[in-house]
Amino acid sequence: MLTTQLQEALIGEREALKADDAERLRSAVEEKQRTLRAMHDAGANLSLERLQRQLAALPEADRAKAESRHKLLEQLARTAKDYNAVNGKIVQRSQQSIKGLLTVLTSSGEALTYSDRGAAERQSGGGSFTKA
Image 1 (spheres, rainbow, N blue to C red):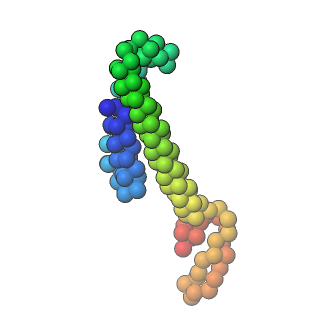
Image 2 (cartoon, rainbow, N blue to C red; image 1 turned 90 degrees about the vertical axis):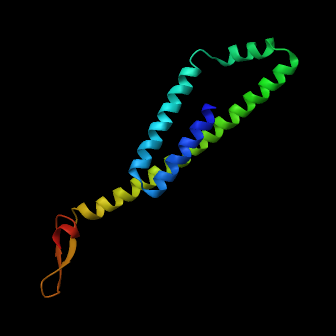
Image 3 (cartoon, rainbow, N blue to C red; image 1 turned 60 degrees about the vertical axis):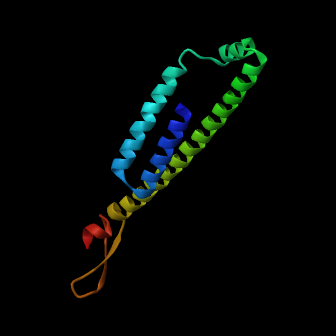
């Protein structure tokens, strides 16, 4: 089932993000994109109205089974959406950390450095790492 494949790809993406593994992340994102394309292609001719008409035309026993599968599909889609939101938060936190590090490394304000003799000196322009 494509929704299960999507969930597995999202779990792989999350694990790669947490492990800071660029190669695993690239593979997981590629798998996610392939699955999303397949889902899009599979549902290109479907609409909720068409699905409801098809369900209504089924015999009662088949309709109950199809409706049960449809509910499962909706639940799997909600779970995949939640997984994707968690992955987005991980990416956002990583970006914030990187921006913070870049700010420290490239700050243009005054920096406190030390002379050859160990005396503290204030210097403007450039980060403390570029002046040290």
